Length: 374
Image 1 (tube, helix red, strand yellow):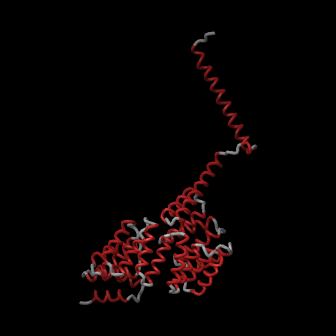
Image 2 (cartoon, helix red, strand yellow):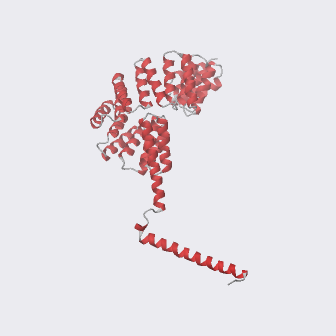
Image 3 (tube, one colour):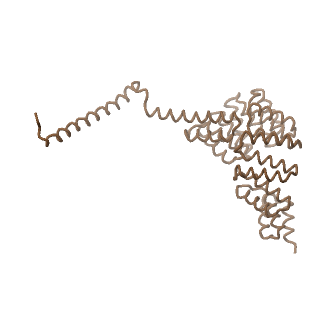
């Protein structure tokens, strides 16, 4: 039967209305079914999304651990940061990120991350132990001891907590106590990298550099991390074994090529051997690797100061200050560099800043006396 065309839209509208009503009832039914019979919906989209985020964070954490095992601290740092971005409640990721930040001379930033981690998981021994380490690296030794002891209470078999406690004792001048604690850590886990590193550190603090080298070397054999090679090189340099120091710093640069510190330490070793041209070349390479690493500017400025190239010294030392360096020697070198170029008006503020840090600073006092001469 043929229907007039003006009846067709009405029928389509009625069908559409019925379809929308059916969909509405179906949706309501699904809500009640999910509420009362959740076993019928094992793949809830909300849970799936949360699980995917958690898996992503754990994968980033695993990637960081793998990068660290290979010795690449820069890649590990990035992975731990990504783990936190994927799951802002991942306390372990915060802790491991904080530890590497401290080992990369970013102590203040490390403290922010460590505090966040311990706020999220105050009963996790790894998180609390790392917090202790970061407190120590920020010069808060008594708090570091307190937190390390708390980590040991949480897990008496967690060897890194003893290692970080020993480090805090060493930094606060309690070397005999540090030695006792690190030996206790060695009995718990003699192959742990943190334990071996801090055993080396305690012996280094005692001035027993050869013994320190043995522990640092054992740690680097387990995990070829740049900071372990840096510690090796530092101790070789203290023993004036410069060839061995150079090899260690070169190895640190090899395993972590995006890190400026190994090149900076290498340049400083060349400086100590009075190989100034090679030192300058290496310092410039370090700056090219990371233009915001402040110690290289200090070292390059110091080299130029010693060579009496005061204009260049001023340029690099002021750059170091702009990047956060605040030390007596940098301030008085800047003041003296200005004074020796007949700019005492610019020299005096730097010399006074040095005296604020150390009222007995002889170079700063001498600089002011020089400027006050008629």
